[in-house]
Image (cartoon, rainbow, N blue to C red; front, side, top):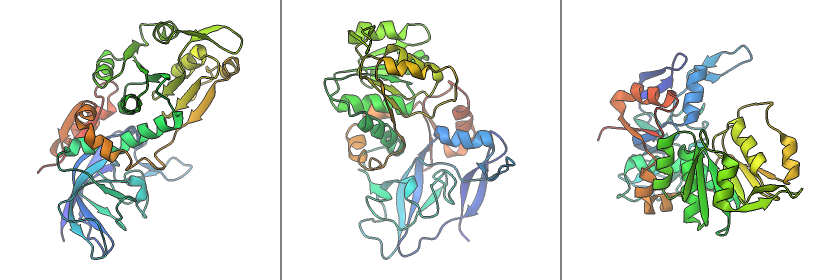
Length: 345
């Protein structure tokens, strides 16, 4: 029996690296040797819980982790078309019949090999060029999340936008906004190093919201406008919340001019401190953004075309032999921006 290493949820905030049987592809499947896989906040969410919740009693079960993989095709089923051994690929983790890869399904992208069930180009797998590093290709899934958020905003070149949160999704949104031709993009965060990264990937300005008044700075950068009652407000057209903190939501409400938009892409932390009534004073439009209904492979060619720019989002590249350290970094607030686990050649 051929085996491989698989990363599972272990005890609370711990992983288990176990030896499991290596998948054997059927006639409609492909087998991918994983070469890089990013760690997402969803992975750490399951680690905090100690696995996938299974009942009201708080019980959990261990699950394979990782839904941001990139790798190389090593076996192809007889009925699969368009794929060949040696192709470098990214996958759609929501395209597996057995459940979402790395999020409760039977398969995990942080395994040495990943079975692509019912492999079909453009549906659950896409090929990327040989000159794109595997670690950058592993950003495909989170950059699809960021792209959907920008698409939901319907940002126009003439718009002025602020992105709250300079993590991978927020920075990805900033990149997509600039590639879309948006006139002025500001990124706000509380960590200076992340703000430096924001400027390096093309943000026009940054705001340290721990030390600066957000409304005042936005007014300086985007001019002065008014809300529905004629009260002075910043001239910002679109607010993107990639942070999920109640203070961010409230900052947008406090700053918003008449008919501004707020796009929510981060998972929101519950709070009673948000003044929803304040939205009336600006007729603020709230738009929710979830996942990537169409964007998962729409982003792949542009990710390849701008690979050096997207590479700046990766703060740590950790070899699979040190995967425990990789997850420790991801679990430590402020220790890393984006951790990608790399697999041996």
